[in-house]
Length: 292
Image 1 (tube, rainbow, N blue to C red):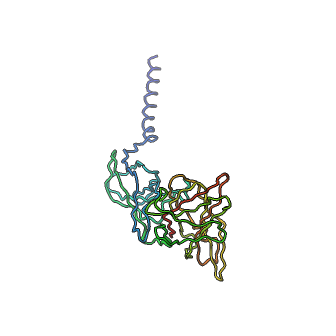
Image 2: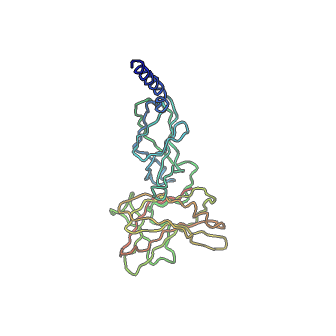
Image 3: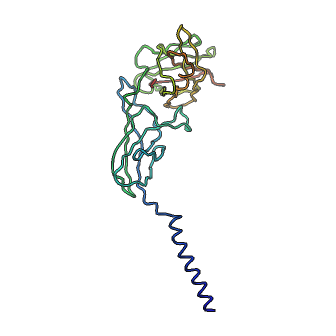
């Protein structure tokens, strides 16, 4: 009986001894993380050549020693396993076309970069600040502060373009652009840039930035112009949803610019058609930037 108990005890002892090392393999020591805290990312510009500092940076794309750790919606506290001195790069991210599923690091902003110490179980607070890259071309800037327009109505439009000043609807500065269909006979507003712009084709990034608020959807698109005076309205258009408060959007026009192979330059256009049940569509826009 005692021998039988000894055998059982010995078996349990060696089984337990064999199990302990395997537990170490299954649950290795992962180390104590350090943390990077980023609440906001700020933008500065040269207003005369780059326009407003207004932005809608929603995300931080965080890199440690050029390796992507992840993209984080702001404000964010990012856990990292590295410690000691490391290069940290933060790219300013946003929602392309205002869609949460298409988050990107905006290619026209210079990433924030710092080399600093990371300590386990401590928080490094960063205040990233970005600017536009010197390689960014600003083809068109319109802040509606000057009496003259860089936009004109098209032959399709049955109402006029307006510029309003000194009201609660002005986003910043003294004035804002205003598209309206306030009378029942008016069924379509459409305007386009007075100037034509040469834009890169072949997948290079082309974006239109603007601040807006509206009680009706509106469209943004381009006319492509070919030699001999031929002009076509590119069929793909971006539809901007209603927003009671001022919003900011970054519209990707890259594919539209490449739609017609023979295009030599482009006009940007805005269009408004009344939504069902809306007798007085109104759209306010400001701080338009066409960049590539």
